[in-house]
Length: 112
Image (tube, rainbow, N blue to C red; front, side, top):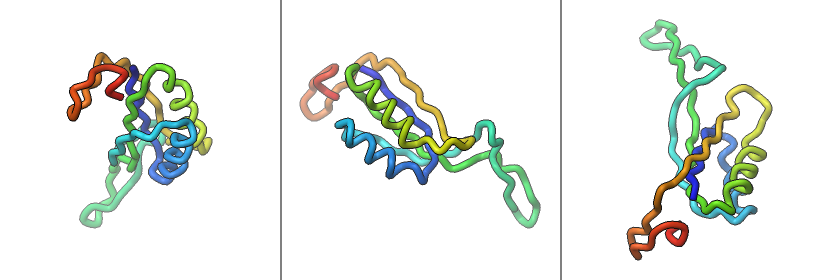
């Protein structure tokens, strides 16, 4: 089992959701977040003064998958979120020690 964390541009969310459904991944958690990487954020006005905000709006996806879904899921996110510009995002694949379905008490791959 793996947890796939992906940081993407907000306007890429719909194409990522479509790509994930094509590889039969239907469970997804989405969070709005802010951050910066190579693009070093942006400038903004606060009280008439221009300051470096250093943060860009992003979307974080969290997808828990069984091992056989890792490669198709990563590939779907990477291809659908790609624009070729700085700030396209990152994908992290993290080992999941366990997963428990609260409703049934199931553990492990059956709970995903």
